[in-house]
Length: 432
Image (cartoon, rainbow, N blue to C red; front, top):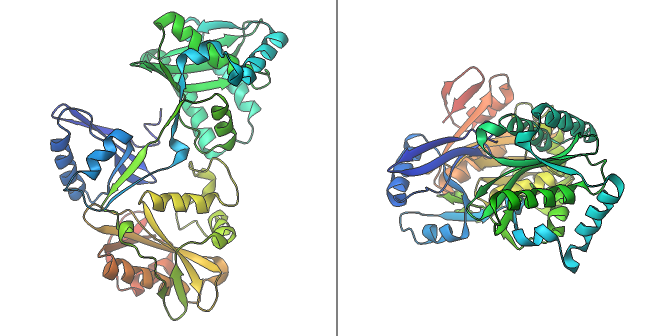
């Protein structure tokens, strides 16, 4: 589903598979699948060296963590997970009946649905006109008029997977009302003893439809393919409502997807204050949350930062602390080192300096943005220089930067640090 958005590629070497994709706009790999993992890891190290890439792995499970802990040729191993992307796992047999006190809520919702609308007919997607399913999805879209960026993308991909359903050989059902109109659709696939559910979409105007759709899908799978052990309903993406809902169905486990970052310099950061004549740099603090929020939603100021928060797929719950939380999460997985810029003699945050895109062999990209009301005073130049010296002298990194060609103040800021123009393309100047 996400092949375009994540820029997914694959390689097979020695009968061992590796995926490459973009996570936080940085190259990331799957743990090698196959019998020759050590040899392929050696090849992967050479690949990231040649292509000036980070060596990061995503989707690493608990079992694979020990491999990284015990590998002598991996230095500065940073490992963490973001709970937003942890999968929810359920007992297959429990969902077939929803019996027992702990499922009384689900039974009540299903009974409410039946009392209001009767017994919905369950139909295999293969036996229904795909246009009827797409018509339901359009109605679903009308019921959700203000989606966030991730919801928009997920809806578009749900349409895509319905259109490609037969090619992909998935399993799925639709629910039909008494007028034979589609009111819900679920799509998934069976791997070993687990049903993975990729799409669950239903018309919320039908009360109790989601537990009805969920149980109907599991029962359909049981009848058509036989009993399984588990159901994986995937993650909640940080959506608070979805998290509450998925917990109400009584998960028996959560599967955490670890990010492993090799040679991340954040392991060497001691977070002392970097002092200049006009500004100083510190780690982020809770008191910075309102200012950091304002910095991120100023689309005019962020135009040359290359960021528009309305297109940020990581924002599923828009609130005052979402940008701060995302920055802290990025640092936890070793993706970036974020400094707050503060005016000398004052405590309020006036901007941000960030080191990110840490390559395996010690390169990093440096960026700086200052709030509009503090621009034109030389604060950006000094903050950039302080971070540049820290990255080079204390972390031992080779520092790069880039700026949009239209952004003359940024070009001047970078060049004032002593960095030189390396190359250019249609959009950017690149400095080293």
